[in-house]
Length: 460
Ligand code: URP
Ligand code: ZN
Ligand code: ZN
Picture 1 (tube, rainbow, N blue to C red):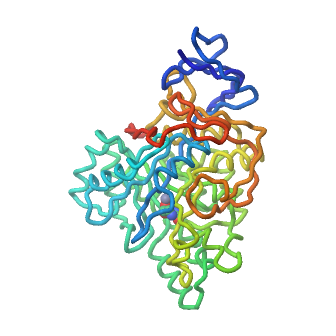
Picture 2: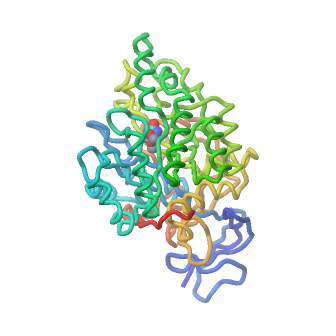
Picture 3: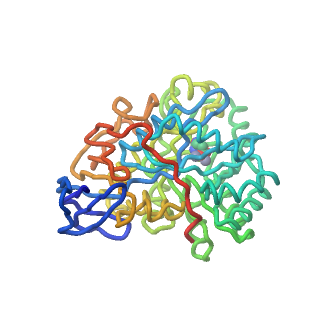
């Protein structure tokens, strides 16, 4: 006995097709007309788009920072993801200094075991690189299915690693078919620029972007591209924010280098004017890299359309305004970095990308689901609607309208950076591996529904 979704338009990265979808068990059984079998239940989705469940390949749920943790844990973060049409996320499990990678992994599995509404995988962020860590990699890649790793060129004194470490890690990972994701900002310059701002009495959040100008991102992006070229290894640049960095990626790709890049809704929809808000309000927009101007936004949209940018992920890293962001009231460099967004990625990209004519429906699916699945070893199980794929399907109502507000969000954080922003198009239903998990605003899935995903090596 299966389910037939009847009357919708299936949208994949490649095509839009007016066709029915038959689900049997956890997977898609067939697409077409006359696919109903006896005993099937038919569900009418006339007028709706059927899109593959979103894949958010960059989240930080339950991330400990000093004595606190992010506002969203796996339970609230995954519930928010589900209600926004994201059925898979890949979180950055982190190896802290002195830990083995295995300890870092075990720590993150424990966090996720508290509950998760959707499927998930882990990238592993490495902060302490040594020979023992290198020796752990083969098992993590092959047995645990952790086929992507992360290093930071910023956050001096905590997460930042040196160029030789980046180089060695890229080579070691490439030998195993894994890839290194990199936070590209020059951490040394940031510390010095922040020191100079503070020395001049510039303590408020409006000075955060001045300590992280585009040149600081561009220098790191150019450097990582050259390190990857020298290592003859692929590299994935996370949360790219500026047109100049985009051009560096474009040139590398044109030379045939395996450089991949992600941007985030915040860099496409919000801009640097948010740093001019009165009082301490701008702390709500303290993230790294910071927001840029409208010209950079336009360049990023073009980069998405042209495929220079591969994926759109949220970098969801939520801190409450009260009690967490506030820790930096007298010193902007102490404001915990990051913003929430896992709930709103599809709606923002649809409203300000597809409906604004900046990207096509297929681009939307490509950048939010298909390409992250391909690059991070989940395709075609995830990221498409095709026979044999997991039946992760979003029933998208293109006529629905909405407004993002903290009052109604699922995210467990006391604000949203998108407060008051209007959206058109919304999630009506979400199927996760064949089960209706979200229906017209109601969560139907249990909080233990999400499964850990062992991922395959990079599809080059
Ligand atoms: O400000 C940000 N992006 N915080 C999250 C951690 C990171 O750098 O990805
Ligand atoms: Zn980062
Ligand atoms: Zn991040």
